[in-house]
Length: 361
Ligand code: UD1
Image (cartoon, rainbow, N blue to C red; front, top):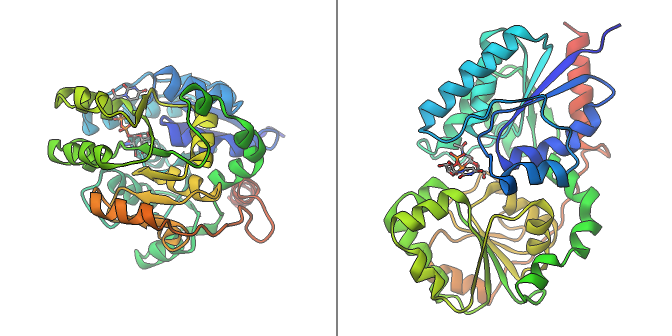
């Protein structure tokens, strides 16, 4: 009997991370094909992740880069639809909340191909946040909703979703669990920038709300200026563009305690997060990842989708310098979590659910 064909659609950094443990579990049980939309394309935003995470090469790369949200999503939708019409596909998996997620889910749903959404049910309740729009719509056209947290299951029930909710746990935690010692022993970035373990801050910022408005971007620069710790700041391309556009790069370059770097790969980001005294970030993934590795997090937003992390070592500080400085004086205590759900790996739960679903059709 022919193996069912499962297609994963990815395009952005955090999706490669979630794909890594799942791709290993899918191999052998299904014919697994990866479509890369091309949303992230610089070597250190894309190929580096495929190499480090030993991901199979994407079967197809659509090379769709940049553009407005509508243009990018529209081009992806049309290109993915063409492929799905040509290739046999029994099931499509989409990940997280990017434009690639929404385009993949819509293309499959319109062709009546069942969709599984990894990281279903996450909500910030900020209606105009691009990711919130992507998540909500993706959840509502998916058949299998892989929920990483209790809150995400509750959110979907409240929205009246009648499709199958699966308490799958978190693939990001599973990958960290497997890569823990490799991450801890990797000191390449610390050595390169002369940073001492526990005595520097890792800072990342790329959310539209923080970097697209010149006022907020200025506030971020002021925040960095007021810190007294050494700070490592790997700059996301979106943020770099905005910093240049608003002529803030020269101001940043004058800050003595600041190390500006290119975006880092998986291992270097995680080892910097592990060895930092604290992580300041607006990334959803890094909030969880740093906590999992035992590092306190100050989230540069007023809300988080990962509500369970608040009180477990994550404090919401927005771009408020006073709040950040106060939090740095008394860092929150980190409480550990397990990657397993009832003793099972998230990747195992997801693959078994897909198998059961396809058998029942
Ligand atoms: C996207 C996701 C966001 C996710 C983030 C992870 C959406 C709406 N947003 O945001 O949810 O948290 O990825 O990093 O999908 N660029 C480059 N090189 C690259 C990638 C991007 O120069 O390799 C530039 C693009 O040309 C674009 C800008 O950076 O102008 C932003 O990229 P985009 O993919 O639109 O959104 P992100 O901010 O990366």
